[in-house]
Image (cartoon, rainbow, N blue to C red; front, top):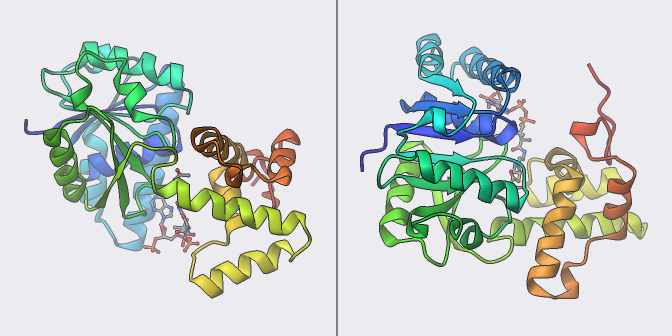
Length: 285
Ligand code: CAA
């Protein structure tokens, strides 16, 4: 199938970034949000991020206008009927994702591919909610989506070779680099990234080093763009804790136990950038 019409469900940070890159690369995009004001807010963020790229000269003003003209919003998958690819980017709750997939299944064009942007939930279980699980796959974009080059593609137990190939080729058309992983807890990205962040939090808790020195060691010593504590704040400490929980439960191995300080930060409501404070402070502008 020639994929030209894309439906993105969820207009939060990941969803608006995903809609942004598809629209910029020439796809007709319908962004589904449950409420009109949320959909409008997502469009506003996309316009601002396109402006940012235009101001830097990485896209032209005409590219920006063309991308915006290819974007529309809908209140349900039903209203976005007839798409060739859907990318679900709602919050990380398994039951909610299954519900979205059932609605997408009913609204999709015949043979359409249904993708989830989950960062750690089982793609295989989400796929079991639809009639044909061979057409379900994980497309795990990284934040900020317009900037990050990777899409981790997750093959569920029943995902077909054809679906994998189509999504692999499509990712390249988006100007991103695809990398494949099987559907096991944390896939590759978060199985490797989260224990690193968790260890950085344990180092802070044990007084091995200060917040700033831990981040400096990893930034300058390992050439990471952000230190692990700053990155944890950027991702959201609640998200980090949830992913450590998936690894811990999924492998049943104590090496994945969440750092006590990570749990405590979440209990305190210090979730990082989104709550205004985490390991660092983020005063509201
Ligand atoms: N949309 C469009 N452009 C954006 C953008 C957005 N949302 N956010 C940043 N940019 C652009 C900026 O305009 C700038 O463009 P130029 O290079 O053309 O100047 C560029 O990105 C860099 O941005 P800034 O100058 O504002 O800031 P920076 O140099 O400090 O970079 C950063 C910011 C890109 C976020 C960088 O710090 C970085 O790469 N950090 C690591 C991010 C990371 O690891 N992401 C993965 C998180 S894990 C995940 O997403 C998956 C999961 O499952 C948890």
